[in-house]
Image 1 (cartoon, one colour):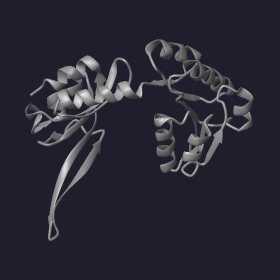
Image 2 (cartoon, helix red, strand yellow):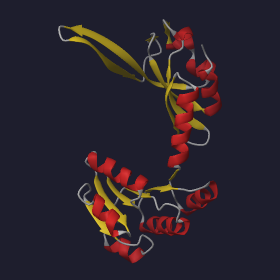
Image 3 (cartoon, one colour):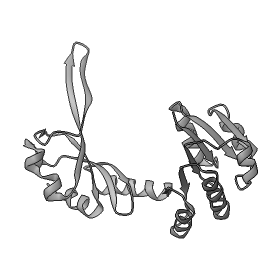
Length: 228
């Protein structure tokens, strides 16, 4: 079981801390504002009031040995840079930092951040994708060049095998799973459940209503979205 440190308990940081705690992970939540710490204390393993730019205070609270740190210090660029540097020096292997712009992100990467997140931008991208492409159920940016999407199988894919469709050879994307609705009828009525086929066989037949979970370069995914 992983141990997490969440530094900065604004909207994003507190949401991450609560979600991790709900999944039964050990969470140490840190913020310099006492009211934020008090608000989350009952939900996480430990909650501490301290300044994340104080290396001695961070070491004293016992964050060594943690598996990952999530740093979300709002618009305080200097504090997030300092906290990232300290966490790197302490030796936590995975460091996720919320950035405010690309320059900030570039500095954070040079200091040792293993992942940069832009929550507002990423949410905006996902919203625009679902609004402009009704067949898109989910869009997740993995990097500046690669994404993962969930897309309804277009009619031209119906009743064909994955091999026949040639997702990898023709479109340059990888199919990692199929979400397939399963309808069952009983005395209690009709229910629809979702079957998930992970790493499907090349001989798997695509059916109407299937949702394809695919990963690939952004330009290749854009071509796939245009298939009818």
